[in-house]
Image 1 (spheres, rainbow, N blue to C red):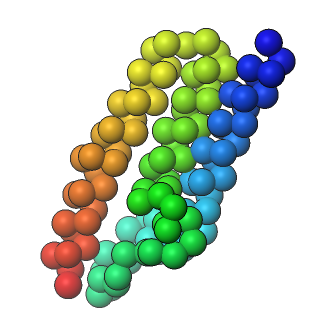
Image 2: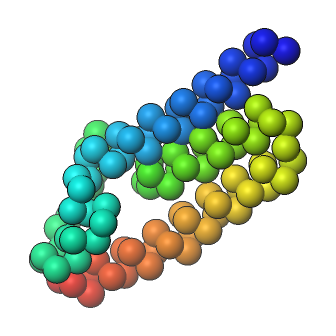
Length: 103
């Protein structure tokens, strides 16, 4: 039981770390849409973005999955899956299209 709890906490921590690294690399302006008024730049391709296309969204979903596993919540796992799918398959392409229009 303790090992399972450590694994779940580890997933939550890993999710938070991935999201924080994404936040740090993008900078505050990109996170609160201040950058939409500036010319578009190339998408980030270094650091955490070399490993994961959407580290902030992936981190949210991973942390949610860790929380759900820790709580033994099947609905929480479904939520984590839906969160990941919606953020990476719906929101991320919308943001990409908005950045391309700004060019």
